[in-house]
Image (tube, rainbow over all chains, first blue to last red; front, side, top):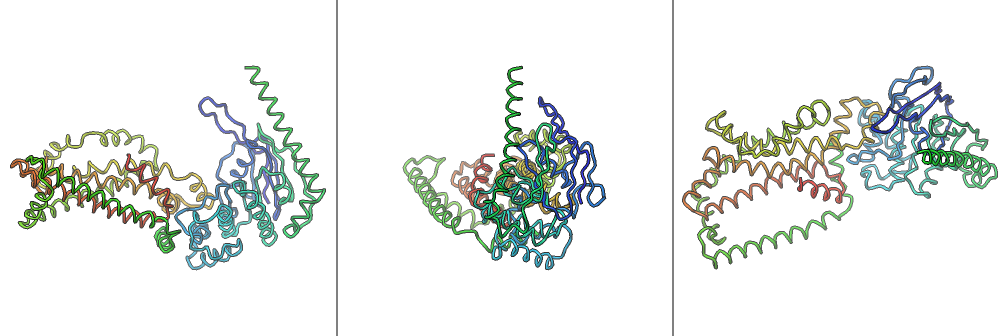
Length: 269
Length: 281
């Protein structure tokens, strides 16, 4: 279980830019085995939130506990999947997938056996000896996912993992992620800017708004699981349409609000 | 780890494109060299001035100098200096560059020194080295180091600075220690740019070798040049020039082979871009 209480993060002033309150007074609890999606416009602090939970970013106020222990830097209980894939271009797919285990000192034979299992799970069997740049974006992100799963984390942190992919690839990977998640039942925090993605994947959708970054609402997604086999009927359902259009309405309000605010500051200046 | 990665990368070339591109390039460079040789011969024959003997005369002189053992003897002592000087440049240059790239304080301390010495006319130091080390190979080795080492340092610093932050972050998120970050991510990611610097430095070191020998101690190939110059023996001068160019090309080719072993994973387009950017530096 992840318990976040009163979390605040301020990026200090840089040059002429004023300090930015990236996150303000954020409370959030993520249950074990929950698939939580975080949705919001750019600049709402959703990626910062994820990076803090990953242990990559310090914060200014508040507490974060994972299974009752205070968060202190990166840990073996968490693994991250990056929007930019972050694969090592000089290393084979096999070495990339085995990398987390290699860092932990797992022997070569053992870590490669484990990597081969996960390469199969993400459907890349036969590409073990290829280099990342030989692969398409979708395939590269499968490698990123396999690398994260290889260390068998309790928590999977996904930072807009499909954001850099084309629509068709993204949909395929969403379905595959559902299949994999339904098998493994990891706790997942999944950052996205797509309403459909947030609803299709998540048990709950955390809606965030910018300046300062905070939680506006947490929406329960009442869609049944398993969803992987029923993606088409889910996306065609009235329920799905109602939730996504409601989320979109509220996201649009944030944007309109920002525009007004912006024009006000412009006219004041 | 990077060694196994490189091996596998070489065992599975991504596509035949780089090879196809490479063959015509060898062809055209041979043609270009041939045209140059013919032009040299013709101009030399027709013009008939003393300072530009035709290629054939230079080649005859080269054979003579080789036969009486002068060239080979000089070449051996020159190459020994080059090997020592460049070896020191490699170890110290990459070492200092890595430290400067990794530690801001080291970089701030050494930055100006490196750029100042890199742009300074190196031969100014020749008398100083001569005064310090006296006769013998040491001052020449020092000059060879001065010619190449700063290029290696500057490129290594840049290489470290341009390691993608996303990879470092990935390593940290998977709990890499500082040592693991350095050996498994930063160093392999920096290798292409470091090697680009090493290639340029190799050419500069050959230049430094001849210049050092000419200006400091009349030894090695530099001595042959000095003596030939005093006798207005243009054919011998140009013969040594040919030998020098051949030395430079062979050594650079050696570096290139090492480079391709280390960075075989680079896609062909990036390799070309890096080499173009590198040769301009």
